[in-house]
Image (tube, rainbow, N blue to C red; front, side, top):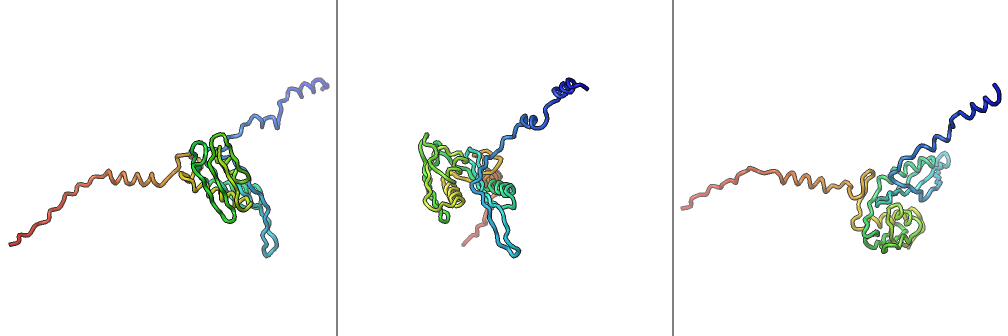
Amino acid sequence: MSEQETKKKGTMQKPRGRGRRRDQKREPQEFEQKILELARVTRVTKGGKRMRFRTCLIIGDHKGRVGMGVAKGADVAISIEKAFRKAKKNLIEIPLVEETIPHDARVKFGAAQILLKPAPKGTGLKSGGPVRMVLELGGVPNAVSKVLGSNNKINNAKATFEALRSLKGAKKAYPGKPVGKTASSGSAKGRKTGRSEGKKTDAKPTKVPQKNVE
């Protein structure tokens, strides 16, 4: 075969490998996740030191639902996966009034102390550190916060979640369900009472015989 024929065959071949991966689109995720802290921790055992990884993960959908999870694992990927599952179980729904939180909240968790205040439209988030990450992923557009106690990231994040739970209208959220349509025990109670009220009793009042007193 001549050199020209080999060149023609080389030009006719379709591109392989990385070219095909670009066409594939990723499915949109329900929650966005951010790592608040990733640390290597060791535990002293009888045989020596046992090294593991601890991950603090914050997840949210920017629509009022946010969660937090802390987990350990032998690998970074394992710890992130475990923390994500925990965060899904600890989702809360943030109540918003005029694009901000309804009222002030001051909560102490351990040595950490957090102050949250509502802000008018256009203010944005005047906060930093773990508080800003939680409020951003939760979809709070305007708020002011202040860290008054410890600088521990995990404790500050937990104090922020306690402050959000203390707000009026805050409730537990569930993955896969839109905001405002969370499962509650009140609906089940209402169904039971409605069924019981709808039943009619056909029992007739009994007459008590009267004795003639002479």
